[in-house]
Image (cartoon, rainbow, N blue to C red; front, top):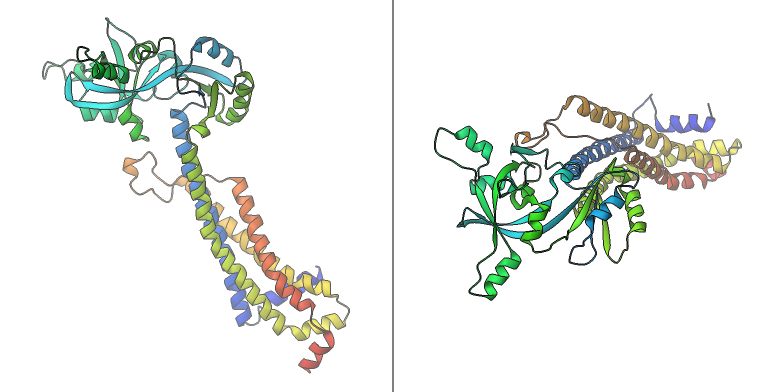
Length: 431
């Protein structure tokens, strides 16, 4: 055993008696343990919630979205989709047209909503978004049938406006005569024409309600977004052959940045803007990341306070062991070795405290992953029963490096002060 480590350990831990120095060192050690434990648990829980939110939104949003760099959309979507489909990692593509319209229930102007209409190709959308799979009532059918187009709405919007699908009427048949609900969509160009001419009537399109989708994790989406066929949307907004953008689904969402770069080299930046799933909701993801590291910074104050305690406890050790230091230096121990002895004390506190904190923190996180020990309050109205946990190696590495680094920094001043002790004066004082 290196004599420097042996002396450092003996100065730090005195098993024969419990002194004030040992007590302060123990408090410093426990501060490091609690700080590391808390940071591991909090970061893992926030990572878990982040993964859940990202997973839900990425199921709803495309991995990549290509939109026009100008306010209007663009044409020739078919040829562009064919080009995009050849890129490595691209699984499916879907063109869409988006715009706002006034939804009126069966001619009743009192039951209307301003909604975001998305015109889609039904077959292509299934490969890009999970909305098709989340159709819980009726079916996702926006095709024209018997001369009338279909519309798929969110469950919350359907409940608010008391809209029925054909499947609802089948279940309720026999109680009263019921038919599937019909709604009208009135586009902004139609309203503008009506306002400009008293002889014009609003050009409203009539749609059969064919299904309800339920994105219960994003309730605002259910209340405002409706789906119709792409051709119907082009007629509604009077943009023949035009689309708002093209959405892509990749083999893995992690490929989004690379595929974005490939697309940008293919398309003109003046005409097209390429957005990844992160770019689409950048503000939300940035806030989540800010909350994560903001909480970590607050918890890190526990470790900072423990580091200040290390400064105090090691300074007291230097004062108490002044004679011993003088004797060691008179025996030939260099000032550099004296400095290393006290730096080792800081390292021992940092490494031991970090190790215990990591073991307990990671242990609790793993148990939470396996058994869900801590339930989520109000889980009846959410998709999770217990707090989600996701352990990331980078976060753990940062915690370890910062904690041990702070403990070593805290030991620099006491170590430097010990190395300045003059052997003759130290021994003389004790005599």
